[in-house]
Amino acid sequence: MWVLKFVVALSVACLLGQQSLAAELLIPRSISQLSANLGGVRGRLVPIETGGQIDEVRTTLKINVPVNVLEAHVVNAFSWSDDQRHLYVTLTSGILSVIGENKGEIACVMGHEYGHLLARYSEKGRQDFKLFLRRFWIYQPGSPYPPTPNKAYNPQDLERYWLQDQVRPHQLEEYYADIVGMTRMKAFGYNPYDCMGLMGKLMGARPKKKLLERFVASLAEDHPLDDNRIEFLRQHLAYLKAREQRGQR
Image (cartoon, rainbow, N blue to C red):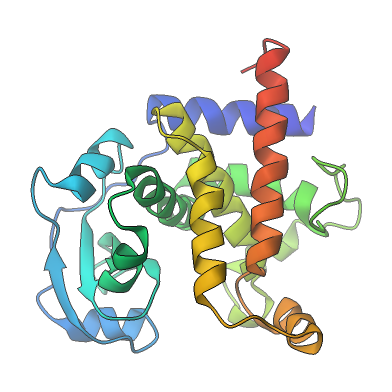
């Protein structure tokens, strides 16, 4: 019942565009704001071309915040707010060079980053995220999907999530954003398998971690391991397809 409420609410919200964010369509005047929000990554920030490929994907996905490009070699994408609480999605030229002309992979990245904004700034998104945390608090890739609600989950952890960086379950937010991105792109006609294809590209572009490095990364890094995210997306897509076959939405 919990997962049914979560998936239905999230799918309907994504499809109808009910999970929206109010933000003025402004481009920051100074790169210093962006550098402060993105861990010191520096480069020239440029608006996307109106009517171009990225703008087309943004419009199709009904992402109602400005999307811009940071001219930097780092392969990454970001969702952030400036000092005036304007919200943005930023893709680096590095990740765009990896993606190439694949609109589905652009949609995956953009939908994922929008998922972060929903979890942080949308009241509806926060409520969905609470349901997600209750179910996935101790999720391990490859375990039965979807997991049963975790009785050890403490709702107060969610309140601390936005107040204290040291207790923020970053990896869980990445999984949540992955679900939002995949669900949104599927609802608006993109191929959800492109998400796994992109993750495979990114995994291949990074140095392969040894066993000890993987263990440390699983505990210390704010993103799950790439192969874990691929397995998570595979499980979630299989779950959605099974629901469709049963006539559930």
